[in-house]
Image (cartoon, rainbow, N blue to C red; front, side):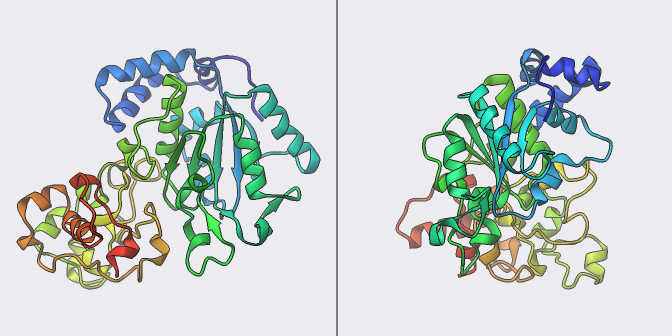
Amino acid sequence: MNEKSGSLIDSLERQGVSRRTFMKYCATLASLMALPPAVGRAFAEALAKATRPSVIWLSFQECTGCTESLTRSHTPTLESLIFDSISLDYHHTLQAAAGTAAEAAREAAMKLNWGKYLLVVDGSVPMKDGGVYSTIAGVSNHDMLMDTVKGAAAVVAVGTCAAFGGLPKAQPNPTGAVAISDLVKDKPVVNVSGCPPIPVVMTGVLAHFLAFGSLPELDKLGRPLAFYGETIHDRCYRRPFYDQGKFAKTFDDEGARQGWCLFELGCKGPVTYNSCATVKWNDGTSFPIESGHGCLGCSEPDFWDAGGFYRALSLPANPLHVAATAVEVGAVVGVGVALANRAGKSAAKAGHETATLADLEK
């Protein structure tokens, strides 16, 4: 789908991106990923020499929202230019080819780039009744995935449907939907969860892979730790109101107008690991809580089955009584530890002992 010749920096220069702008982007990306400043220069040097990688993108049980998020920009941003500069050799939604020509393109890209291409998948995989609920060119999603993953260097599961099963897996899960990591066991898999995910997270993963030939450090759910290492609650600008016990009671009361915490209106920020509060959306314009709506927890497993989106979590009623250490790492830690103890398991590190949203509502 894209011209393959030339390095990444050559491709960007042809699109009007100066080396100075490129260096600033690499420095910002390193900062977003919590890496030392010197890594920004290493990013730039490695990316400048990198050839444009082949990417095969498979779309299964999904709504196309992830593609919309990751390919649409307003300016366009440098992130989108990075994305445009990969060799996107197969994409169900964006490709011009159809039918046998489309499948021939996928097979040709696999053969030409065997062992080197990056496989991106959005959407869950239906397993019930032989996978008949979603097929492409007469091939089940399962069979296409397992065929394409054979020659991939790594797999990126984009969006919560691919990462954790998402909406298709929600009870009663009529199609037997499963996550990509449930099926792919012999290749590195990184989960970029969210419904949809934040574009810069995807480009950050791609840039890290291009620069260092490996995936970034991941959390226990396979997500890039730099972007999913803290809860939205930890970085939310409304957090001081939570600590003061000031909560909006309705979406249009005086507290809401004053920007008070949305916890009692069902905000799932305390149990949701993502970088929405810092990276934000639409080129850093805003994120749901800043727009007056509580977090839905969309980057967490089973968020569709966690109960009402507007029902408050079962956390301490008065945050002023929460231990100081719990306040530092997020009040949800106490709940996670309690759940771990109930199950007879030892708690993991405080910042990563997270239960699913569904568990917290039991």
